[in-house]
Length: 417
Image 1: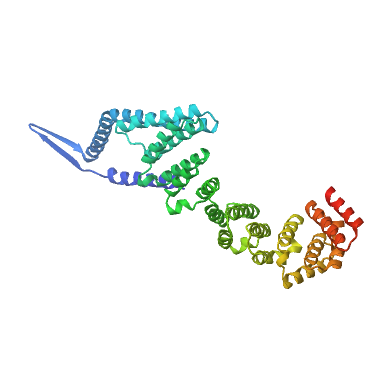
Image 2: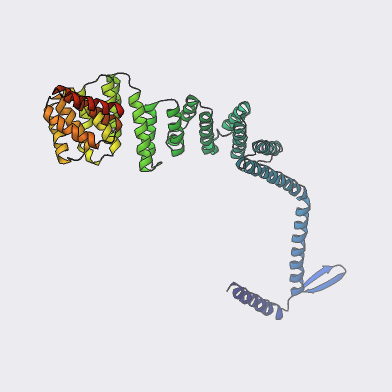
C-alpha cells in the first residue's frame, strides 16, 4: 500500500513539473558589460537545485571529516564499555561455576575498567549499580574463600556506592547479603544489625524475614523468631504443614525457656489462640507446668480444648495427653472425672483411655473398678511406659486385696517390660 502511494506521488510530481516546465517561456538575462547573457528559467531553476544539493553534500562531508576524532573516541569508549560488561559477566559465570578466585579477579577488572572510563570523562550508563554489583560479586567470592578482610573492604565500598537515590534497591540487596554472610559466620547479632538497617518495607520482604528467622533461632530469641515465623506464614512463605511445624517448634522452645511458673504463664499467654489449640503444644505446656510445680488445675484448663478432640489425635499424642493428665490425678475434680469416664465409655476398646480411667479410680480408691480397667488396659497398651505403669498398678491393687501371688506376677511383668 505504501509503495502504491509513493508511486502515485511520483506521478503527480512528474505531471506538475511537466505542466510547469513544458510551457514556461520565461528567461533570465544576465548583464556583464559589455556582454549580455540570456538563460532559460528552467535551466536557472535546475542550476539552483543542483547548487543546493552540491552545497548540502559538501557541508555533510566536512561535518563528517571534523567529527572523525569524536567518533574514534566514542568507538574506543564503546569498546572499553563492552570489555567492562564482558568482565562482569565472566565474573558472574565464574561465581556460579564455583571458581571464586577467577570471579573476584573478573570483578576487579570490571571495576578498573569502569574507573578508567570515569577518569576519561565518559560516564557509563547505570554506573553506580554496576560498581555496586561488581563490589558485591567480589565480596561474595571473598566470602566463599573465607577472605574476610577483602569481603569487608568490598562490602564497604558497595554500600558507599549504593547510597545514591538511583541505587536504593541495590543498597538494600547489599545489606541483605551482608546479613546472610553474618549468618554463615554464625554471628546472629551482626545479622540482626544489618537487617535493622533496612527500611520498613524492605525488612518485611520474604527474603529478609527468612534471614531474620534464622538469625533469631541461632541467637535463641524465641519470641522474635515466633513473630517472624507468623509473618512468614501470613506471606505464605511456607506450606501450611511446614509453617505449623516451625511455629510449634519455636513455641516449644519459648516454653522451655521459662524457668518458673510466672514466666511459663507469660509465654503461654503470648501465643495466639490457634497456637494454643495445637495438641502437641498444649500437652508440652501442661507437662512443663507440672515440672515447674504449677497448679494442676491450670494444666487441665490448658488441656481441655485438646481433650475435647482426643478422639482425633494420633496414638503418640494421645499417650502424652494421658501422661500429662495422670500427673495431676491427685487433685482431679468431679467434672474431670466425669469427662474421663464418659470418654472411656464412649470408646471402651481404647486401652489408653482405660488406663487413664483406671488410674483415676485408683486415686479415688475405687479398687474394684480400677482392677477391671487396668486389667483390660494391660492387655492392649502398646506404649512401653504406660504398659509398665499398668502392671505396677495391678501389683499394687493385688497387694491391697492381699493376693501375694498375683502381686508377684504383676511386679514380674512390670520388671520385664
